[in-house]
Image 1 (cartoon, rainbow, N blue to C red):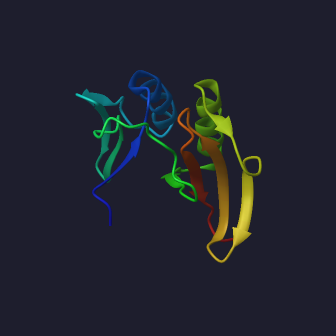
Image 2 (tube, one colour):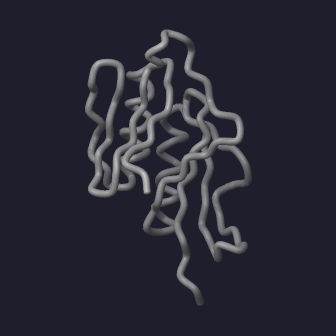
Length: 127
């Protein structure tokens, strides 16, 4: 559905260090800088952080969450730990299982150093 997702940052080197670490736990290669942006490419799409081109401050979207697909609960835990170790902060409930209409999910939420809300998500198999 998406070709790419881009979010704003006010500190490109800090954002690159954070996302290199977090996305590295998912097997994503280090990001590449292109002027005022950093891109992380995979076979399924692209994620990017960018300094706002209008020169104003980047702000986190209220009510927005960007979810990253994980392959196991352990990978979600590693993703979360990497984020905390690189300037992120935990938000919502602690990492763990949530059950609902979408089935059983293992989730962890973070705020990146710019305040963007992100999620590591593993869809657990049906029992």
